[in-house]
Image (cartoon, rainbow, N blue to C red; front, top):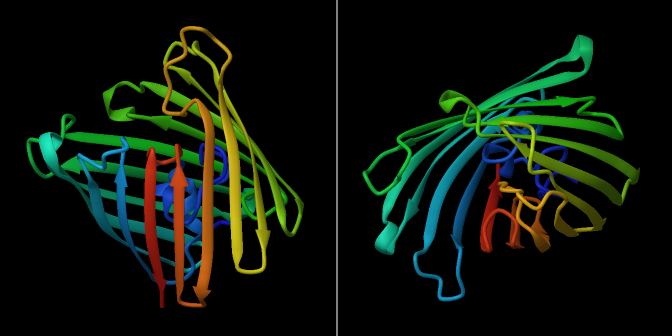
Length: 234
C-alpha cells in the first residue's frame, strides 16, 4: 500500500514520493530502487520536468537521492535527497529531506523539510511535516491514515501556513487489488485565504506492477498536474 502516495502524502506517502512530501516515509524503503520520472504542470507538457532517483533502506533506515531537471523557460536542475529512521521503542519515524539548486534556473537555492510518522507500521498512522524549515517554515502539514482492511486505506491530510491559518483539507482513498493500485482524493479550501502545497480539486493516482521488479505509476493533480514514473526494484 506504499507504492502510491495517498491524499497529500503526509500520513501516507509512497516509498518514493516521500522525498517531496513527508520524508519520514522514506523508511519504508527496504530494497534498492531506481525511479525515472517525467512531469509537467500544463497540458502542453512545456516546460517538462524529468529526473532520476535512487532509493534504498533496510526497513529501519531509508534514504533517497536524485536529480530533477526542468526544460523550457524555467530550465534548471536540483539535487534532491532525504533520509528517515525509525525509533522502534516509541513506534515513531523521523525524516528530513532537502533540495539544492544546481543551476540558476531554480529559484530557491536550498530548501529543507522535516517529517514525523507515528505508528508507521500499524493500521492507524499519524503524519506531521514542516516545509522550508531553513527559511523559517512556510507551511505545516498533518494527516491521519487508517487501513480499513488489507486492500483499502482511508486518509485525510491538511495544511496551514506558518501562522496556522489558511486551512486546506484533502480526504482520499487508496485501493489495492492484486497488482493494481488506485487512489482518489479531493483538495478542499476550508479557509478562503488558503495557500498550500495541497492541490485543490480532484486528484487521481494509478499504479501497476508488471513484474516483481518493475512498477509503473501515474498521477493527475497530485505530485504535479501530470506525473509518470517507472520504478525498478532490485
